[in-house]
Length: 474
Ligand SMILES: Cc1cc2nc3c(=O)[nH]c(=O)nc-3n(C[C@H](O)[C@H](O)[C@H](O)COP(=O)(O)OP(=O)(O)OC[C@H]3O[C@@H](n4cnc5c(N)ncnc54)[C@H](O)[C@@H]3O)c2cc1C
Image (cartoon, rainbow, N blue to C red):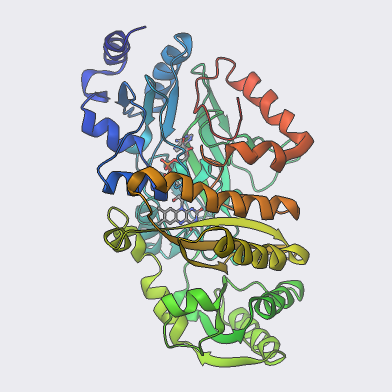
């Protein structure tokens, strides 16, 4: 089918105003916030594969009609909602179509008795959270991209929020959903507190990155909103390894603060300059819930911190972090460091306690040695479990040769992080997903279970139209 035919057929199916063809709109819908693409755009070299059009359905029925047509004609399709991905996951195939759910937004129902809220896939998370707060509830999901991300994308990427130690990731929050399969069939997974009726089918869509279906509606848990009973505190600690040991003790002893963060000395100088001695990291804790619980958690963490060589920093660093935690979302379009000829970004991995410190040390040792133009590599742990934690590496390098060299240098950093993680049995993506830039490491990540992902793809999207290039190698 040629381009014009695709556009005309989609217009006939959904209405002319639902199919956008202006080059600027297509380009804007095709790019996410991965560091090298952003720099390419800043440098004027903003090439991305060209989609034919952006389709903006208003209802599940319209998604179904569009997908049935795209599938029948084997047209590559990239689902998207908020566009805040950082993994090249919404970049289309040349000649493909972008299926954009951002205009399917709004809250469908709030169920205060059963403590859940149902909303459409394009509902911005920030809108949902404000809506809930006004009624005394919270969704408990606070990714840093709260001002940018929409619900469909948050489920499709298996996202996680800053208060995950208490509320969990989106996999713990999602109760049920509705999705449209590649052939246009609509499926609904009903809302239940727990079921024992076979494999949990929600997980076909959680983290599927748009390659198994298009999520149209979803239901998430809600919780009482009690910011007034929060306990918070921070300590400085020397050495990442001591900080990780302290967090492990908090988790293993059974405490569940909402926020558990450990920034290394590198990040402290950049983010909390002057709050701690030069070679110290900073630990931040917040507990939420009824005051009887937050007070007990606070007392226990204070006791644990006393067993280590920590410096009490009071509440100020946490307060300042709370105020500025999402500011980066408002500077994404042109970060200031670009003007200084630098690229900076992040990459997150996870591993059991026994390995996480070794991965952190290995990456920090290797990168400066192998990349003369590296100017910074640091990291923080921000999501902890009884079995281990994540490290969110932050890095920056000087651009050697304009946009031409940025991608190679960027992927060099990522390769080192992936290799050191896989070598020690860690996982190469804690919450951003594979996208199209981590796919080549997926066979090693999944090992013998990778075949299950291929078989799922064959069963649910046999024509392979949905988001080619994420998760699955060709
Ligand atoms: C500054 C910044 C901070 C961030 N912080 C966090 C963080 O703290 N935690 C975190 O988890 N992530 C974070 N992210 C990453 C990003 O916000 C998340 O991946 C988010 O879940 C993406 O949601 P979105 O609506 O923007 O999805 P999009 O970018 O539109 O899409 C992301 C993926 O989901 C698929 N998808 C989108 N909508 C649908 C749908 N309706 N049905 C099926 N598939 C769909 C797409 O195909 C793509 O693969 C951050 C990003 C930025 C830019």
